[in-house]
Length: 554
Image (cartoon, rainbow, N blue to C red; front, side):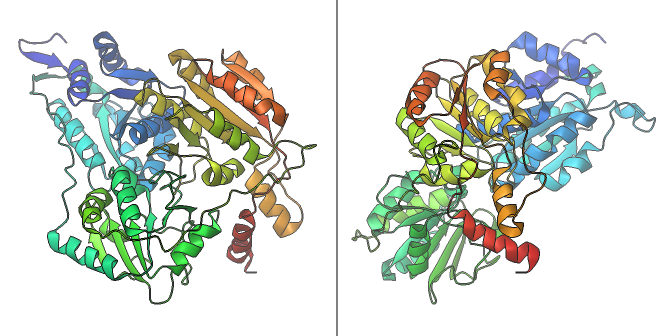
């Protein structure tokens, strides 16, 4: 259909609306239903379009982009049914970890929905449980508004995903030109003066104050204020798993991660405090040792800051609840706190290698070599598995969002595409994706994307021949394991087949040189590292005991 005077064809209007909203990159897998819009995006050259190899990878790329850039990631599924269903896991992960995403999903021609049309799926209903809003565009005219307000909603309050379904026939409709609708940024309003007054008074009365920092500190740009508060207050700072990086891991007030796989130092600091300031932390299962009632000292005051009011008092009764973004509250509070000496001076030791060199390397040795070799500002993405237990304890994290993870959803396959998204968001920044041999295969096809884009990305695959955590749990619970052993894969050869430089490393003496070589490639590289399959991260044993109770009643 030709464009009338002053009107735009839908395919062009949709492409222009995405660009006008200030979107920097769109991660996608193309589909025939939206070929006209892809054509317009390609002709215009803006925004940047990153073709992934699978929608799951595209969703995690958009998530890594959002975490690194501090703005919503945008993912477009060009296929209505299977493309949308492939996106469900990364969208659910974004909801669980409060990652702002705008999810644009093609939909079939709405005129023929009831005729068994190809690839039809109720995408609005599909995404609704995992999104802050899930809607279908009713007309072409409202698309620019939906995109702009979708980006606003994704980033506001507790961040999360927003889904918009776009019927394919909108591309052939026409509409009058619309004024660009740039999204309005969330202002993260400053807290009420009375709220800050009360918090300052409580902190002033406390003899042993401590802070438990979660991902909400990072999402609200609160890291600098957190560090300033901890230094003035003399308070130890423990983090949740998703809060790692909210304070540099080498800072004198940092006591490490709290929880099943955390440090004894963090547990001692939080358990000894007479006031705990819980900043942007949801107090989930992993952080609280399964919601232990004795996590905090008897009589300790609890102050909780959270953008999501439903998180406050959910498990632990608080003495002061503050609904709002952690960053502005910390920024308003820190300058008013009197300087004092630290009451807790413990520092978490790092677990030494637990391996037998005859069987393979230690994860501790691998991470130590990464710490020594990584350039300043490197962003690391960790997958799910044994390797992440070591990463959370031993990785040097010196920048906010320096460690990207799937935390509350625990989704395998996250690390590689998330690292790609971070590298796109931060041009020139080295990204490192760490995964086990079980999780890496979920999305390893996205290596091709890193190669196509020439990204400075290093993939590190820990090869131990099993779903390691499950194997260790099964052997501890039953004395044997079933269905968790993995067949051998030559990951270096696979990477090389993708055109990616790769090496296999099995000798500790080669680790330093291997990392230096990988970092010097300029483009993507892969290191397949042979890990001792019998090495167990000691804190895993406490989680195994809890799992016995949960699963077996023992």
